[in-house]
Image 1 (cartoon, rainbow over the protein chains, first blue to last red):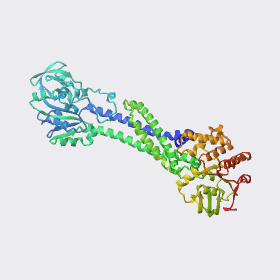
Image 2 (tube, helix red, strand yellow):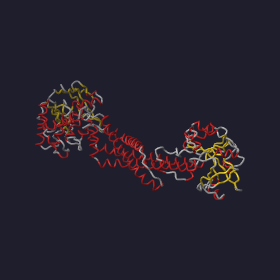
Image 3 (cartoon, each protein chain N blue to C red):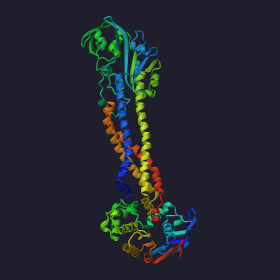
Image 4 (tube, chains in turn orange, yellow):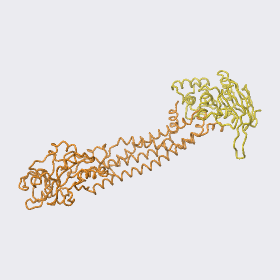
Length: 406
Length: 221
């Protein structure tokens, strides 16, 4: 018989009380775990979807507007291609992908076409520094979401994304947007003439509903040669992590490239940030509710327990148990309640998230093992806080209550 | 002397004013005696026992246990004093209902640095002594009242006390069981030399004592 055994025996003796005491804390932790698990996966899914939409930061020449860039204004100014190196060598965190582009409106067979020069993967291979930075051609990942979620489970099914991971593009090869392919009657492997050079159509891109449908993509260096704009680009598209953007990524980029216009594609970024913030706020609100409800529930349970055991506590103090030992008795009990509540709450919340995630949010939810640690910490803290006042009262019970009742 | 009491006074605050529970009480108890404390209801018997155990503070006077001033000790010192030197036997047995007989007996050892096997061996030995060797794993509700009081006596002995304070130990027992318990206490006093202070209102129980204190309205009679 020692203190832990005494606590354990008391638990066994009052099983129904134990279950009712655990109910609130278990359900509370389950709600937190469920919401948090779904929100983490949801954040990841949002991040990936937004990544699929493309870059969220544009680096443009100072005098250019976003409209100029998208309409490929023939007179639009350019910036040196060397600016890509500057961004890469500055190693600013939160820059997921860089894509320098040169765009100009040209005429092919009497039709207006936007010629876009891009850097495919084989060019990147020759520049290890660019590879490390996640420059065009790196497998796409979304750094905005937590690292532990398995990206492959969520899948990159969007065809639009594939254009960013083009393996190679020869000097006389091109990709053609779906709309322009129809109007120029081009097929894969057919030939077309661009500004006096013959090109083989390597691929017709799937319809995206964006300006890309009206574009022909060639290698950046070939575009520079054809357009006679050496070592210049129209813009550098950056896929920046949204949380990094809210942490000042833009101003860091402006410090590196002071003579450029750096802008976010505001709606995309704000949507992601708002979604993430909303989920985090919901988790936080539930956490506060659970601290109150769980703490009060545990406190109520412990209070009832102390009242029921007044004679027993009095007897323990009578035979020489110090106040500290009485504290131990109740705080060990509260900790055990917290541990059991944390584990059962984690299991219940995770199962609920895995079951409800696909039904409610269309998300495939995997368990987040690190949530077990958070569940345990929160649950034990709530239990200890709830037990503090009843424990204090227990320690002050008069030791001679047995004699008085005799 | 194992216990010395000098000019002990205890006053209670009551809605009608101060009540003198114990008045100018002085006595010495030699080691190894079987002391009975008798008196009418409200005469201060239990109050005296509480004061000797350091369970209540006194208004004035001195109480010493082998020179240790109980009346001047703090909470921690008093807890240690009781844990190391006192065994308690109550009228209501004061057993924990969800612990078996042997677990109840081991309870005072819960905070001692002993191996569990040592605790079990000591408690088993004492249960044998009180005639309950075959009831070690019974819960209190599975034992008769006489057996429960025997478990309480075994528990009082487990920390090898110098004194046993017994508050109406036969109050809840029928006459034949009362005799058994009183005989058990007498034999413990004789065999182990443990000083016993027993509060009782039963005149025949009081006859077991070789040192008798009779209280009358808070004073020694």
